[in-house]
Amino acid sequence: MRYTIKQIADLAGVTTRTLRYYDQIGLLSPPQTGGNGYRYYDRGSLLQLQQILFFRELDVPLKEIEMILSRPDFDLRQALEQHRQALEVQVAKLNTLIETVDQTIAAIEGEWTMNDKDYFEGFDEFKYDEEARQRWGDTDMYVQSMRRWKRLTEEQKEAIKQKGGEITLRMVGTDPSLKPDDPTVQTEVGEYFAYLNENFYTCEPEFLRNLGDMWVEDPRFAVNYECIREGGAEFVRQAVHVWVENQAKSI
Image 1 (cartoon, rainbow, N blue to C red):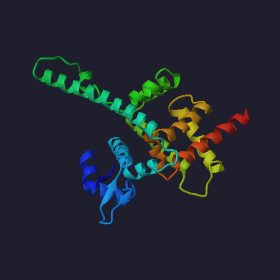
Image 2: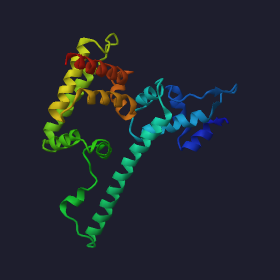
Image 3: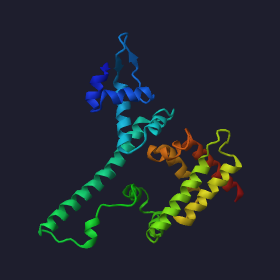
Image 4: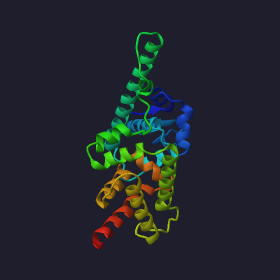
């Protein structure tokens, strides 16, 4: 089935101008253009546009979306499952915030009594805290991380975030001639390993390997590396695997 640009725009609730821009930047190009110059889309276009809109809901920049969707190993089914998980976290948070709003209104009108902490129920410093709790909540590492983080001042938290960003930038690098097993890259992986142990939890090399895999498999994490350079997430995963293997050899 073919869709005109207006038909697909109406279906998705976007403007034809948006679709033309997506075509211009290579994010969503129509598979067919008629002799009259009209753009025609197909069912595959619908699915790709859906992915784009899902990622936009998660505040992923367009350039990073294009990098993700163009990856040879992009798995639509896996991406949809990850979108569902992210949306479930958002729904839970929004429901909590709605309840906080309702209780605050009731308290103002004298129909409800709130303690001071209740006024801030639903505001969470960690964007993916609930998801992290579900994935790692029963591990010692998660408990350690939460305990350490809550003891820090805002200034300390910002300093740790900045340090992590700087290490990540050096670890991914911008020099295309560097290989994952390059000594300079391996040094930065070691620095990141030490950074996790110093600031969050006792991290074993094998767990770092699992993190490296997750950074590629979950687009929400992959964009942190893809925005530094194209293929950055896969580059870091390979670098982490090399580092872990070298650690095992040295034992």
